[in-house]
Length: 292
Image 1 (cartoon, rainbow, N blue to C red):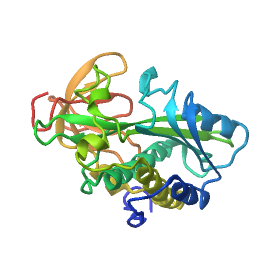
Image 2: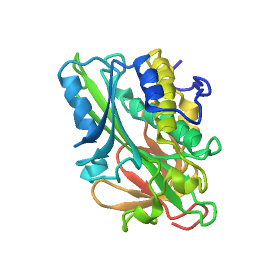
Image 3: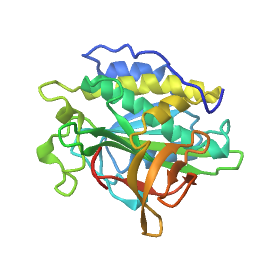
Image 4: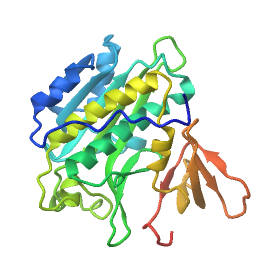
């Protein structure tokens, strides 16, 4: 079933004192290659290099520090040592239609959303997705939307016999507010900030992420994409937002929904009767229930 189903690989079984050995055991049970690093330039580059050498899917790299981490649109991204879960996952998705490659980033995001909720002791559904590639939470005091994680997908050879895809994700785990970059402090958060007084264990997040991802990858290979789950986690469905266009312009629109077939954002302008699909762009809003 493609496009309308839900996938529930089951509640991850993980103890609060999960260790790196536990995560490695999960990885060894299904990943073709899995390595952890103290410092790398970029985990995306590491995994892309593995795929270039012929490493089969699925492979994954995790680092404590990235010296040359990057985000969308050429932005740089760097976190204090051990404060974030920095991971890249590599695929050889010759089993996936070219128009569905975006679903790899989607399932990585869903796996990380579950992992953050478990590791942070958050209620299910507390972590939302903000189209196209952010994991966010709502500050219920102010209504502000704060970024918890970001995703960067990179592909090569799409449409050929040997396509490759790397999905990088960085989630803020034990990053304390006093160490947030000054220019991002009002728009970001971390699990330790969301769970004051609780010990947030990055190893638990890694363990659950790898475990959850296995079920999602297995399902996707069988043609089952968790469309309802992906759509249901979208924060901005039905909200008025600002849509930033690639040409630098911005437009105030209603983000009505997401298209689970194409991955597009469905928006409607004030003068439009029917929604239109947006494939490239970025949405922003000031606060839930506020004025954009």
